[in-house]
Image (tube, rainbow, N blue to C red; front, side, top):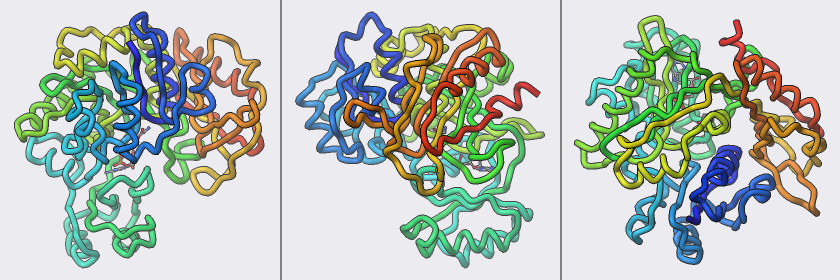
Amino acid sequence: MKVLVIGGGGREHALVWALRRSGRVTEVVCAPGNGGVASLARCEALDVADVTALTDLVERESPGLVVIGPEVPLAAGAVDALQERGVRVFGPTRAAAQLETSKGFAKEFMRRWEIPTAAYAVCHSAEIVRGALEKFGGRVVVKADGLAAGKGVVLCESHGEAIAAAEEMFSGSLLGAAVESLVLEEMLDGPEISFFAVCDGTRAIALAAAQDHKRIGEGDTGPNTGGMGAYSTDDLISAETSAWMRGVAQKVVDGMRAEGTPFAGILFTGFMMTASGPKVLEFNTRFGDPETEAIMLRLETDLVDIIEAAVDGRVGDIAVRLKPGASACVIAASHGYPGKYVGGKLILGLDHVNADVEVFHAGTALQDREIVTAGGRVLAITAVGGDLRDALAKAYGALELISFEGMQYRRDIGWRALE
Ligand code: AMP
Ligand code: GLY
């Protein structure tokens, strides 16, 4: 079978890598892909936000299966457009993707279906924010309603900070475009867990749990990024917590079905493990990045079997098996990320890395047959091991062999688990 993967980051490189391992896949095409993906798949140029360009590409390639990586095409209605043409596509429709694309929709959905989450208020003006703040403690979170590539969430230590953030969101000065509404939330404390479920519209099964490191700085300090590293271990969450989290995913699938917008694809729930139990921070309707890099290395079940079961409405028939032990992924990023950075830096040492480490490319390009940087997050260095220490030692060992001008990475991935 020929599979088309949409996207061009480390997540898509890892998905392409896993698909190429399947005995059932004869060819993988990736659009747009990147400098690393090009060694495993034919890359075709594509603006992932352009649904017409995507349907044209699918018509030309006629793949047996389309796998969508990022949220942007989901929000643009790529799945709806492909399903109308009878294409087998993995991912939620635009209406179902609202769980990710609208924070307000997600919060009200959780209220309707009694899913534990932080107390909140949906506000349409700074005036309403001022009034609503009275019901909250001093520490609150202000979230723009809509996709903002990780920049739409501001953690505020006081009501004054919250009002300032809200005013900047409504005026457009914070995100470049004015928001129409935002969500005000009580601030929760605790470690975060990313839980991935595979859904077919009717059922949700567990894929894996992982922990992401969102902040740029060691010790989880500094601004939020897309994710600076991730790991997955057998004992990250207990069997009981895992079953409970799967139950939340099932509740989501039941609720979406009952509301006439069935959810199929990956449901990625971000949980915070608070003193009063796990609470949902957010839903994403796609694979996480860099969690996927870590998870794909542990996945023993054929990824195509899992995805096809979801597309065909029979995830109940699938048993997901993971390699015992652990995996870890460390991101090498450009100088200046998550702010401004300059691309085009030559990457050295990629050939020196041991075969037991996978270097997934997050933002690279091929230039005159050399691999150069082409993104904020550049490489996702990923390894499996008997335990987390072992996986981390392999990933960091490989990182020492790689260099590019301005390369930065966190040296403390997995610190919570190791403590
Ligand atoms: P979100 O996109 O909603 O997941 O928010 C991005 C990040 O902001 C999360 O991964 C958390 O680290 C943090 N965050 C979001 N909501 C809260 C909250 N209610 N309390 C504390 N931290 C939060
Ligand atoms: N790693 C977080 C995300 O993919 O949104």
